[in-house]
Image (tube, rainbow, N blue to C red; front, side):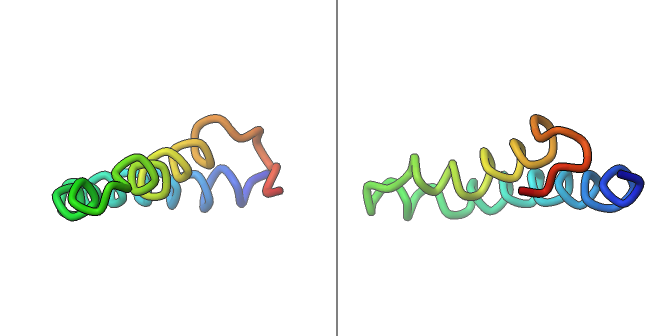
Length: 60
């Protein structure tokens, strides 16, 4: 649990913020390709869920 608190959660926060930045860059191309929802989920929603909704110490 200490590794989750001190390592995995901060990395998850960085991944969520970086994913949001990448989504802003990729969104025009995703809209043209018709997969903006999938892009949003992969770059922002999944890292945010890993960081903020996953129980502490649960990596499954």
